[in-house]
Image 1 (cartoon, one colour):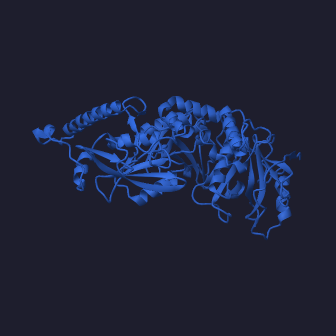
Image 2 (spheres, helix red, strand yellow; image 1 turned 135 degrees about the vertical axis):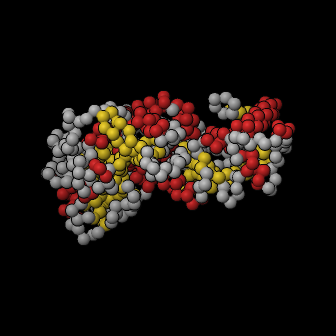
Image 3 (tube, rainbow, N blue to C red; image 1 turned 180 degrees about the vertical axis):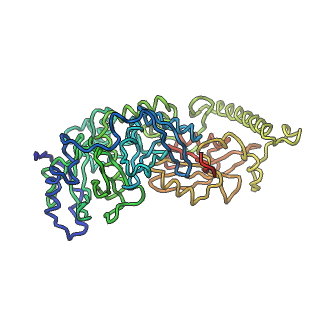
Length: 528
């Protein structure tokens, strides 16, 4: 088999054995020799070989099938999925069907029950084709989950998905800078935005031997659509790599829950042959990373190797459909707000919020918003049957004191009540659990009603892989009750303004609010 030579790859760690009782030399060399036989490795790098097709994936496939889609709160809906219906279109229909807020982060997750693995389908994939490729013996236990995927296109906006120690740019550096790291960051960003190539990614990964249920570390290098491996684990700097996997013939999955049994770490992923029948987990090619950061990099790199420009085209179509929200989130990553002061006035009357510097304009906007807020409060009171006194319009708005009942009466209703990021009856522990599970990028957030201080709110958000809870404090501004996250230095007339401000600015937070976790109502007792 032909070899590919490369150089200048840094050593990321020496080869380490897990379950050292195995035949190390046999494991290393059988990896390539098995790829030319009919063993479990036969799908890895043999694009000319005919593979067994899944039963039912033929020209006689039905043009429409009724498929059940699940939410993770237990709700489910059935929809007739026609041939050619893409994930991007089906996500829009499902958000209406489930009565959930529209969001560009919605995705459809394919869960294979017998293999206990899952993956988020790409926006261009046809759902019916994926459904027809399921093994007929286990398809009744497989599921499609409707879930938010915040990582889907973050790599196009955030170069931190590619750690510099895992990227080799060789002579491709297209930025002159005294800092090599800064030059690499700019080059990676340019490559991703160009969309016609991808950076070379490399590192040591644990590889599972399915025959002996043991793991060994090998050096892997992903270049274009080929994953290469170095079999000379004793070399400090690998000199030769062999073609190992044609990524375009595989799909990338992760374990549904937890990690692989016996894996060195919990950060696993696997490759599954796209058109071969896979009966057990041992028929998959399993890899194990040292950290979640490393696994994220490999997942993104493998997606780019498999789909290439198609991912950028998907993102472009998503921006056309959800332009405002995506463009706002994109500005969070590309703009530098380090010069924003601790206290800044914002005008939210237009399509987008803007910073107001003229003191006279600030006072005029504040007075106008105060009048609008009072009119809105009275109007909502009329609609909800809360005006039991004819003299209600003549009353002054309650001032903020230690008695929280005033605040509860004021913010017990309003436009924030219909926002998809607001959760009622959610405890601190439940919020932490939700964000730990789904808050995969910085700035994912939700707002919940405080149980400790009834009538007030708490902002729960993700930063640096940790969950933070920040009390939204009521403050008194003359006869007006305002809300603040920084003890009153920056005040907002309502909860919606507070959230919109921190979606555009850091303020007192370490990260801007980038994605909200959509609130899902509890399922009804009777199935839909």
